[in-house]
Structure formats: C-alpha cells, structure tokens
Image (cartoon, rainbow over all chains, first blue to last red):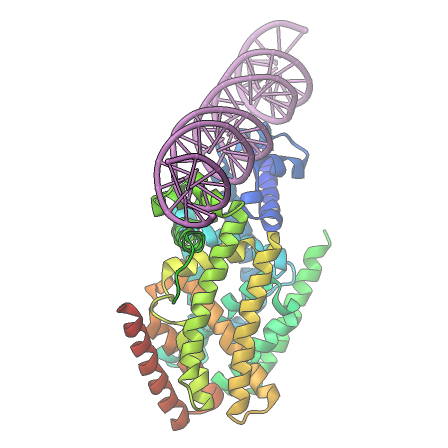
Length: 218
Length: 218
DNA sequence: GAATTTATTGACTCGTGGGTCAATGTATTC
DNA sequence: GAATACATTGACCCACGAGTCAATAAATTC
C-alpha cells in the first residue's frame, strides 16, 4: 500500500468519524461541529474536504457499506460449497464488528431519510439488491428451483431486515446468537434438516470468527 | 357521541396533521409551520395546544397507534377461533388504510429517534410487546406448546418488521398481497398446511375488507 | 531559501425553526 | 351589555447549525 495524500487520509478520517457520530447521535444530532470534535479537527477543516454536510454523510455511508462488503467478499472467497456461500452471507450480515445497536441505529437513520435523498435511495437499493442476488445465487446452486431460491432469499432478507431493526431498537437485547437462532429455526423448516447445511454453518461460523480475530491485530 | 370542547377537537386535528406531515416530510421536515399550514391554522395556534414540538409529535404517534389498535380490536372481536385471532392480528397489521409507504415512513422516522427520546422508546416497546403477546396468545390457543408459540411469534413479528421496513423504503413496490404471500409461505412451512388455518385466513380477510369498506362511509 | 501551493482555523454571516408575548377577536356567563 | 374566559395570530427573539472567507501556518517546489 503506497503513501496516501493527506487529502485522502483526512477524507477517510472524517467520513469514518461522521458514521460514528451518526450512529450515536442520529441524523439530527450529526452536526459538522460534532464530527470535527470527534477527530480533534475544526469544523472548517471538515468543510475543506467535503463541500457540504450532505456529501460528507453520503460518503460516510458509502464507506461504511464498502467495509461491510469487503468483509463479505473475504468470507465468500473462503466458501467452497453453495451452503457455505449462503452462510458466508449470513455471517457477514451479523459480523460482531458491525452487528451492534449503534451501527444498526446508523443505518436506520439512513433509511428514515431515504425518501428525501435520492443518493440514500440509490445506496439503499444497491445494498438490498446485492444481498438479494447473493442469496438467490447461493440457494440456486444448492439445487433449488429458481422459484424456491427466490422465495427463500426473500424470507431470509426479510428476517435480516427485521433483526437489524430490532437490534437498532434494542428490543430483547438480542445478540448474534439469538439472531442466528431465529433464522436457523426458520431455515430448518424451510429447507429441511440437512447435515450438509449444518456443517456448512459451523465451518463458516469458525471462519468468520477467525477473520474478525485477525482483523483485530495489526 | 357528546359535544367535544374546541380544545379537544383542535388537539386531535393538529396531532393528525402532525402525523401526516411526519409521514411525508420525515422528522427533520416536520416543522411547526408545516403542521400549521396543513390545517390552515397558524404556528402560534399549534403551540397554544401543545406546549412544544416534542409533545406534539409524541401525541401524534400515540394517536396514530391508538387508531391502529382500535382497528385491531374490532377485528379481534369478530374472531372466534385461535387461528382467526391470529389472522386478525395479521390483517390489522396490513390494513390497506395504514399499510402504505408514507405511513411506514412515518414509523421508521420514529424508530430512528428511539435512542434519543425515552417517550418514543416507551411507545415502541408498548407496540412491540402488544404485537408479541397477541401473537403468542393466539398461537398457544391453537394447541402449540408455549415454546413453539414463542418461536412462531418471534418469526412472524420479525417478518412483519421486515415487511414494513421494505414498504417504507418502497422496495419492490410491495403491496398487501405480496406481504401476505411472503408470510403465508413461511407459515405453511412452519405450521403445516392445515385447512383450518386457511379457512380462518379467508374469513378474517373478508371481515377486514368489510370493516375498511365500512369505515370509508360515514 | 524564496515562492507557491496546500492545510488549518477563528471569526463571521445568514437562514431557519422553536418558542414567547401581547394584542385582538370571539364566545360565554351573569 | 358588561365582564370574563378562551381562541387566534403577527411580530418578535433567540439558539443553533451550515457554509464563507481571509488570515496564518506548514509543506513542497524550484
């Protein structure tokens, strides 16, 4: 990785801070001043790198999403069977680093603004489509008919949305394990109690764990 | 219905307007001026009846929720079997009058504020608990074990959340029928393909339809 | 090391929105 | 019909946050 210009470093720094502030304080509470304070810089400095608040937040969300996507890709690359791919997707969606109430709150804040900001709308669509198509692809490869795969993907993505919502609202203080348990229960009914699926699950779970532990150390 | 004081009328009027403005313009876009305009009154008049904006919006949300609850109760009173109760809950949650993108957007706006407003938090908890306990009660009465009922209720409520989310974000332009189809698919897998359940569904669907048609005329 | 570009910031402007207040209009009471 | 309570509003104030700008500090180029 080569040297980065100060401008690039700052942009990433401010965008990261913006997402953290957004997660904690919500859209209304995310002021330029707070983002600046959060990095130790001045408000004017933030505006030096982002022409306005709107663009700062859009960049912040895109960056946060890119981080998620990278985690997901890393996991997918380690999957060798369709079911492993499938659980790779799930693990990525409930990674301990991102599946936290504050982060969920950040995304819910975005969702609340989707109808008023075409860029958020766009980002939201991209995120949804990626999840959906990943799920459908993986499920089709397990030998399901396209219709079955479509139906399965719909149910799973609805559950994921519901779980993230509940995480953001801190209902029942649910954690990763609870989330998985809920989904797993449905999957058993939906797809049958295959041992192949279960072993895929344990494998991907272990891999995801290893990855996050790895990410912790430099 | 006896005469109502002007104060009561105005309060309801402004609260209703506030929820509509919230649904359309989101939390940020819901200004006292806009709520006032929406009713033809002045901003000062709104503040005459609500000491501040916060209380106005809280009242608006509580009132909107009360409307939903009344619809639900009316439907539940017409149910005579457990499965009919169950579908009464579902029908109430997807009533054509309330299951609309704008309304969903209004609720998502509230959810985004939950971490910053204890009153919203409270309301959200109440709503969730009511849904959950209604579902559990109905399912237990069908003869399930408490654990099964609990699990079923969890899955159904997660799906409902996910569907409302998607409705608010206008993903796939889903309508009542799609929403029901998604849930129904899962129910068939979860609870088996009972004819008893299906007839309960058609009955409650018809009743819900009749109720909403009835509500349309004075 | 002078010149020029780039980074950083404090001080400022400006618009907006929440909330107050006193004035005026309109019922209601006796 | 005077007095009293209530409804309604325009005008005003204030806080706050986005965005500008010019001045200064630091780094890069030649």
